[in-house]
Image (cartoon, one colour):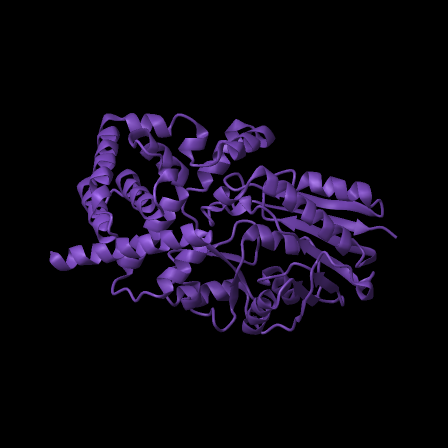
Length: 434
């Protein structure tokens, strides 16, 4: 019994360290969690899963948890010391969403952690707040509070809920928000240079990996119960890449034919998924990004997959006279708010503001204007993002076309998570007319 208690203490302490790292650094939970877990050798898979769920859940429901805690606390969560704030949040999350954890255990562990962090004087306050939350849960008051509006129900900033409702209607907006809280399978793209999708599926199933076919791309497979993609059979040998189907569809829409010597430039390429897929389809690919670190990530992926890419460091907003009209296809997957992947990066919604959306849309326009000069007459320019806001997508494409009458729209698609069987994603394929 003592051994089991010690195991649970260490799990919560690890989760607290990761949450505090996020407080200090401002990093996304996916980055902080990966780094934090890498340092720990867990004896049981269940321990790692407990820490992951506690960190991800506390982060994903942060806005809602703060509203619940503020309802019962005299001092708002935002004004608490970081360690106290994190302990309160992770304890409230266990009480609200982790059925395997008894409320009394979550509360007693919170008190223990407060003392371990040298907050003995505040341990009684934390105990009182959490016991009030417990009574509120039992009385149904917490459920009434958290269900009172879409913002609290889906723990999403109100401005974003309002924007989605304005652009897609309340019903679709709620579907999009709800989808962020559903479990997702890992989507991989078959490296057709090494085998067909059916051969890859057979290879994985022979090694006890649960595999399902993709929904919108013939190159896609979906994998269940993956902890570390790098440990999947065939990963190190380059049999597949991790890529969402929406992104695959964008590359497929380029119409690359192996019989043609298609020169393709990817101006914002890291980590290289789209560039590598284009190369697998037969394009002669030049991949660029803004730093050597990002360029190295592209090189690593290409080398693992056995592909030849020309990788360069280049700021996509800086014109290159040598590249003028030099490419058949230019791919500009521009920096964006990333709201199409809220379900995979569960705290990205807290990092985005209306002002940052506008700034990113302006940056995207600069990259598009620069990229437009690199397309030969009769060639194609692909504009894409992994977001779902019209300001960054449809409106951005229309503004570009108004400034560049030499381009005409060929195909435009907006994928919405929860509505379509993939992440939220946008692309607009344009042709430079002769």
